[in-house]
Length: 561
Image (cartoon, rainbow, N blue to C red):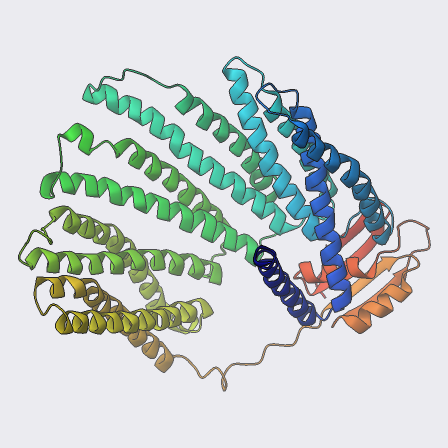
């Protein structure tokens, strides 16, 4: 009984959470809750059936691989997946197609994205393993089966989504390709630099494993193909929405910059620790991390530079919010490194000034690491922040009124205040714990060094940005008095279809949009489903849309009303 309850309880909790989330989202969008729940379960069942059928077919094809132990249980499970789930998949897919109004268009956008991404990752993994086995002189049936079956699933869903390509699916595929290229690019460069490092230092390698280079290189090529397809061919030329800019800024600019900064920090730390710290052993082993560090700097720098160029390419001559989002984000990264480095310097300095004991020895390498973080983060933050402040001085009205600047300053003041308060609480607690326990001594100083450092650095940071915010408020106009209310934009939809007047009338009642219906008299096109049109309204941010019903789907044209 306890086992059953232990299994059912997490399922009920997760199911209740999903149910509540769906209800909230449905109410916010003004859509029918029953229809939303039905669509959620239909798409979930469709996705589960696709995964089970593909798994069954893959398992049956892999049974002939000598490395696969295909016992009775294995074969029974794979056959069950195919025998039971394949007919069910055909029935559910046919019903979904009929609900979409015939033709080949599916309205299950969430299902298409998830199925495409899952099959993409699985097929890419199988392809990499299969190519690796070929280069080793053998033909592995199991990874070839994975590549063949899941590659077919990916191709089908990728083709199905081409007419109504959803940007979040394209950007998710771009992110998968970017992460794969970055990770395995670092591994490939590390392997190359390690060989050069061994040759330069005279290290003798008894065994040189080519597999450490071959497999990452295969993964790099596969990841590059994914990135080229999803980003270079689709995402880069897509509509530059908020989601598109968030991907470029967070995944590309911030991700690449963070990786490059970590590499620069480790490079500086290795150098300073060798000269001023407490290195162990000769220079060869001490700088053994140098190849991986250089690879991280190169890959991170390339990723950051490329996405920074893409971000700048859409900027007009006048400074816009996209410029501010980039500048304040980079400044935030530099500020976090600066504050963290300053806190680490204070904590390391307190330990260095405390008399060393057997329990608390002095370690100069810790102080060197803290100074290195400060030296890497401070110039970046200073360069970005002084540039921002120069722009503010040149055009105070626009910069002070910027929502990006407001969010940046308020977030730093608010989060900094919370961190400083929690650090102060920990500081008092650790101090009282020492006073009421073993007494004041070396342990007391070392116990409070980190809370003390965080209170000092984070508190000063929060206070400084609070001062900047107060100065902005004194120069900014009162938003409630002087700001003109923006004109209210009423969404409108023009639907050109046949036999769909009832759909247009129901849409006007359920959604807060002005609907205009035009009947097609040429007999072309299919009647769209109400849920399909409402899904388009939820996915598209444009205020005015023209939807034309075609034989194989819907054509969506935004226009200026």
